[in-house]
Image 1 (cartoon, rainbow, N blue to C red):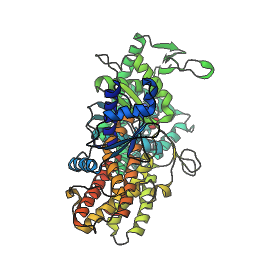
Image 2: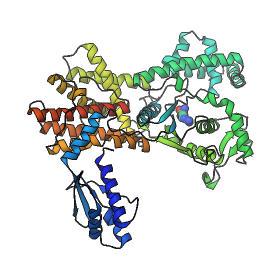
Image 3: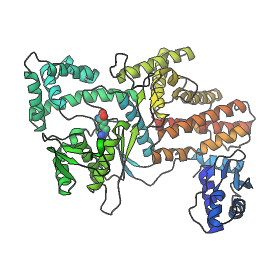
Image 4: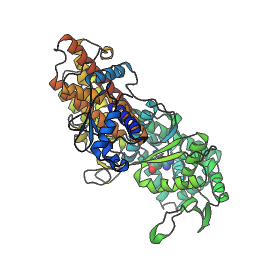
Length: 580
Ligand code: ARG
């Protein structure tokens, strides 16, 4: 463990144990104005041990051995002010530089299915899907880096009543027609065309009737219907993957586990719920009434698992996802990275799954389901982002726009580069800015989508961080050195070097937090701080023009910053341009 805070915290806890015989006491580490950190445990403990805080602090200090790390001083009402030594920092940095994991811990391996992205077939992906896709992808990258067995689950909407009309329409236009291609290029247009036929009364509703019959055939697995349906999914996959590749998202066809895959489980799910006395008939439908969930006038809220017409819905399918993931995939933890508006749905699903016993393993231990709630992306008017005409925004348009705007920025900053070179950078910056805007705010917080703000080269933006890496690369180009080879000993002399070095040592603990708390924004915030610490260092400390020893030390510090920025941006799914 390289992070100064965790080393110090462990030492303080150990000292408390030998001083008072109390184990596992929180050291209460806080940032300090006068030292690197302060431990406030004495204040919290004083009452418990019947001494005044200053005495308690002195007693802890007597048992606190920090000789290899730094110095400690009792101050104020009972703070322990701890300052780490330059030698300790240098030693830890040497470990960091030699470690290809850059201090990222290897956690005890857990199996974690992560449900994310989950767009709907024959519908345009909207900004809501954009966010679950980006946040989910960054979570899976981080969890994998921490050593977990991650199973990506793209729960696409590929089943249900609209498919009758969609299949009927595809059958009419022909699978090889330009209209069918719309599924891959402009799914909403395909959907609208099918819808228009469905709604039309010109034929006395004959078409709509055929569409309804088609759903029944599809659900009965009639071969022709199934085949056309499969063709439609194929077209749609093309669309999803175009978006995923534009976004540099790690989802592939192998990760598809759409609603339809659970169809064979649904009848059994209902039977099991009935057998356990959890599901009851209510107004013709089969319902579970999760405890403690009430609607208007305190009426118990139903989770409908089988509709009165015998069909199954979104809830039944999600009960199947949770059982499948817990039982068949052997999950320790299951993440659902889905819009916050579905919070009630997941609470009820989790309750029912637990009550049904699907979350309890043979040894009695529990599988933990977590809804990673995704906040909304808003327009400048504070409402869900839409086009001016009120239609949902096309994701593909939005990404193209971001790349184009980034192109304008790059054209201004790098007129010396070729068009091709600039195009590569514009793509990385445009996509990176969109992704970073999503990742830099807590996943459950709404944010306002603003191209100008997210493309800015200053402030907490993707381009700012990308620029920081490009700038460091140019330092090494100028010096004619390879940053991956800069591994000399670091001497921490100046205050800005110290701040930068301590920030670098916090990287591993930050990545662990991302995984433990499902919080990519912690990593984003950390990288922003690191880039700022680098800027302050570089402003205050000459690197290339310093004396040989200092120059080597500073180049190592600079290279370590690049390595961490690069790695961290990688976990966010953001590419860093070679130059900018
Ligand atoms: N397709 C759904 C939607 O667009 C999201 C599915 C999320 N995952 C799940 N297991 N329910 O809202």
